[in-house]
Image 1 (tube, one colour):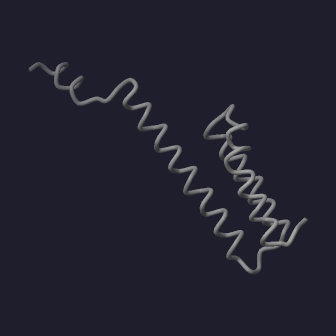
Image 2 (cartoon, rainbow, N blue to C red):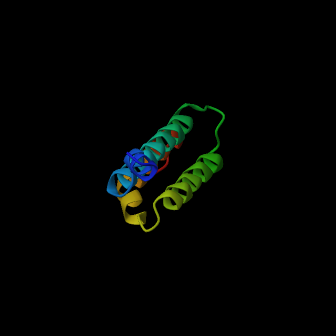
Length: 92
């Protein structure tokens, strides 16, 4: 096998690599959102302003990872975060 054959045999290109990258970004988003929700629910010193800032920053980060997916964020994470904020700060 020549040099080109060995190099092309070791590289992952195309849909496989894109799928892995997408899965990595999804997992990173899930971890980030779990951390945000944990901080909001467990940090007793957290103010409502700080929690709101965490929520806003998490949305900004999610949209930076997944542009044009605001609707998905709004149906997946926004209700969870709103419910958590309502429970934590007794909002109505």
